[in-house]
Image (cartoon, rainbow, N blue to C red; front, top):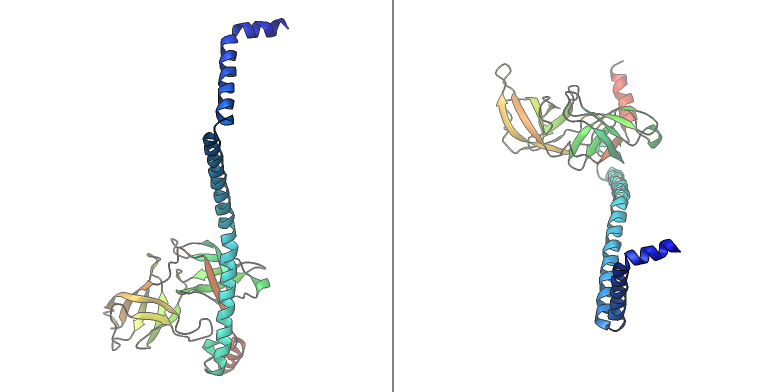
Length: 267
C-alpha cells in the first residue's frame, strides 16, 4: 500500500494529465457526430485496404492453377483438331496427341542445354517425343522417369531439327551455334534457292517427331559457304527459350506403324 501511495505522489501530475486527456477524448466523440463519422470511415478504409490486399494474395496463388488448367484445355483442343483432320487430310504428320506440361528447370547458357518438365512415364510421355510451344520447337524428350522428363533442348550440340523455308519448301537441318540462345543456323540450303531476310523457317514434317509447318523463326542474316556454295542462314527464334513456362509434348498416332514399315526397308 505504501508503494502505491509513493507512486501516486511521484507521478500525480502525469496521472492527472492522462485522466484529463481521456475525459476530453471521451466527451469529444460522445457529443460530436462528425468525429464519430470520421473515425468510422477511417476504420472502414483500413479494413477495405486489408481486404483488397488479402484478395490479391489469394488471386496470385490461384493464378498458377488457372494457367495449368488453361494449358491442359488448350492441349485437348489441339488433339481434337488433329483427330478431326483425319477426315480431310491423310498426311499422318497432322495426327498428333498434345500433352501439356510445365517447365520446372531450364538452361540456355551452357554448350549443351536441357530442360525438365513435370510429366513423365505415368502421364504417357516417352523418349523421342517432340516438345513445342505456340511459338516454335523446344526440343526432344531425352529420358523419362515416373513423373518427370528430361528434354534435350534445341540449344544442344546434338540437336538437329529438320526444317524448311516456308515459301520455297526446301529443307535443311536447324542447329545451334553454341553462343546466342535466341539464334540458330542452317548450313545446307542449296545455292539455287532464293532466300531473303525475314523469310520464315518452319518444321518440315519429315519423320514423326514434330507436326509440319510449325513456325520456328525467321532469317536474320545469310551468307554462302565458299567450299560447297550452300547457304549459311542465321535464324532468329520466335520463342524466347529463356522464358519457358508451359509446353506441349507431341506424339504421332501413326508413329508405330510408320516406324515398323521403314524398319522393314532396312532389313
